[in-house]
Each structure stands twice: as structure tokens, then as C-alpha cells.
Length: 446
Image (cartoon, rainbow, N blue to C red; front, side, top):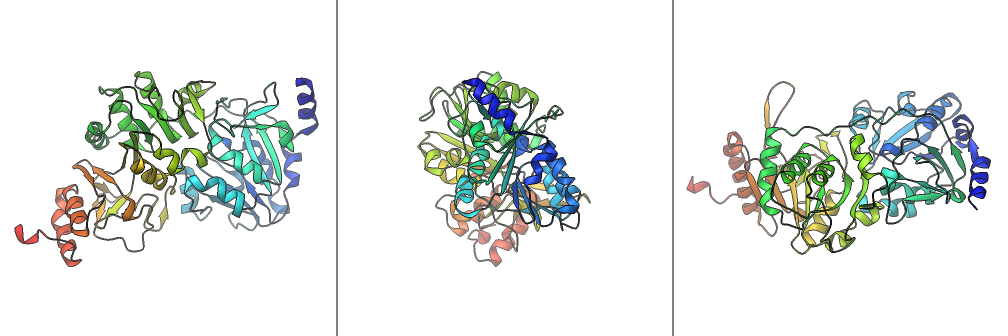
């Protein structure tokens, strides 16, 4: 029977140049996410620039370079979009070469099923197995629903892709594929985690008392979640579990320290669940064919009612700024898009509903701009900024000056609590601003 699969494989085998001939003017193309980007197909499609017009491409957390975005500054031929910017895609946005698509990650599959057109999906996969399946690998969180919606499916076999066990939608069968592309790929860049700063470690230390034995963790992107993983690895907390949209090296560090056992999860017991993975080659080696982990689509991983079923669910994410009303900006600075909505809202809602659950949003109290000027991350009020998390759903907030819980708090209580974790240099200014907004009660006691 296996020989039949290989015969079908050979019938569908094309060069990258042959495969991209299916793309027509006006098409929507999807590159899926992160390591799922089809490097050879992207290069071949870019080579067709002058004969194509108004071709739109979607991607997400792609490390780059993306040839179709780089080769056409006029965007007459290709227009690139991202629904969660990597550092590389952020740079494209700065140059006007990328457009952001707002997306709550648990709706990823529904967006494609009900609202979006995909004329051609091009996705990197692990080599086909004896049963005729290609593994989506660290791209499982998004790839399956996109492939189901696409008119034409082209898989690019990447010999370096780890094979990752999954709950569902972690594979695509040769019978569901239109074309197969092969070729030599450079090894993946060894993306080491961002080293935590002292302020990140201080915030992490403040969070440790809130994490109980047997808790399940979701850690977002950045130096603060990495610091939390590092601190937990050296703490007395034990028997932790993973349920996270993004699996990073922080979880691998917890595993190496003997802290990540998944023994007491309410659902998916014994399995560390994730949607996508980005990190070092050591991380990918750990995930490869590991029975202790399971990749799922984000429609499952990020679904609030799924998260809510996990007792002692602890969600830890970062943000850019918060205002005195408790609104959170986590994806942009002013008009500059820097990342995406991602799963912050999903885990705020889900972890808040979990028995014993907690959802933290963390930030340093200040940042210093390129001119050396210090700015507070706690602001009087956003004015035109993009809000990621509404004040009605923000739970715990943390800086290096403390941890507060805004659930059920009035406007004056929020202002008072937020100012208590602001940098001392900015507290008087913030009190004055709170008074002007009539959300301050304690000014006469100072």
C-alpha cells in the first residue's frame, strides 16, 4: 500500500518554478506561519514578479527574508500581510511593505472557513511518512484549517522539519495535496531566547508566589516570560504543565529542570499542549517525535472554554503600556505595529474562568527611548493608541514594583493600584492626571 503513496507522490512532484505557475493575477496566497514558510516556493514566486499583478500573500511570525515582499516596493505585483508580526515583519511594516491583519487566535480556523479566500496555500512540511502523511510540525497551530480552505495545496518538503505528534490536524495526506516540491534547505537559524534583564527577573520573582504545584502555564513571547520560566526552573514549584499557543525555550528549560511533568492536568493529562513553536534547535530536537507533547490547532489551544477546563491555569503575557483606566496596549507603540493581538485576550478570558486560574500581563515600569529619555509605561489615558485588551477583561498586572488585581475594581481603585506599581518618578504626575479625570480619591491625604 505504501508504494501507492509514493507513486502518487512522484506524480505530484514539481520543481518550485513549475508549481508556482498556478498563481494568477489577483490571487490570495497563504504562507501559513513561522517555519512553515515555503522558502523555495517564495523565491520562485518572486521570480514571476513582472508577469503577475495584485497577488496578495498572508503570513505570520515569519523570520524572513520574504522575497515577494522584498522584490516589489511598489506593491503593484505583490502585497504582503501578517496577522502577527515577527521582528522581521515589524521591519516590513515600518517600511510600508507589510499590512497587519487583526486576529484573535482562537478564531483563526473560523476566519478561514467562513470569511477568507485562499486560492493557493504554500506550506513547508516534514518529509512524507510510510502512511502518506506530511507533518505540519511547529506550524500545526494554523496550517490545517488554511489547507482545508485552499483551492490548491502545495507542500514544500523541508528535510530539517521536526515531526511533532498532535491531537488533530497535525498532518496532511498526500491525497489532499495538489503538488509536492523538494529541494535543499539551509538549517534553521538557532534562535536562542532573549536573555532576561534584571527588571524581568524582578517581575518574575514577584509572580512565583502565585504559581502553585501542578499549575498549567501559558507563556507569551519575550524576555519577561523567558525570565518567568528561568525563575520557576530554580524555584521549589513542581509538577507543572504546558498549555500554550507558543512553545518556547522557557518550557524546554522547565523540562530540563524536572519541573514540567504534565501529570496533574485536568485535560490532555500527560501531554504538553501547544500550537506553534519558535526557538532554538535544541527546542526543536526536544519536540521531535516526543510522546510527551501534542500540537493542536489554535482553535483548540486558544479556545477560552478549553482553557477554562484546566484547573490552576496561569497565563503570563507582556504588554507595551497600560493607562489609568486599565486598558492594555500590547501590539503597537502609537501607530507602529510591533506584534499582534495573538492569544492575549483568549488566555485572559480562559485563565480567568479556570478554577484557581490567574492571568497576568507584565511590563517594566519604564522604557528609555533612543534619545535616552525615560518614559512611564503606565500612561494617563490612551489617545489614538491601539487597544489589545479592554479594561473590562484585564486581570492581574505586574511591574517590578508589584502585582495588582483589577478584577471588579472601580475607576478610582484602578488608578490608585496602577499608580502604586508605576515608577516612583512618575507617580505625582499620574496622580495629577487622575485628579483631572475625576478618578482619584486620595489626593487630599497626601
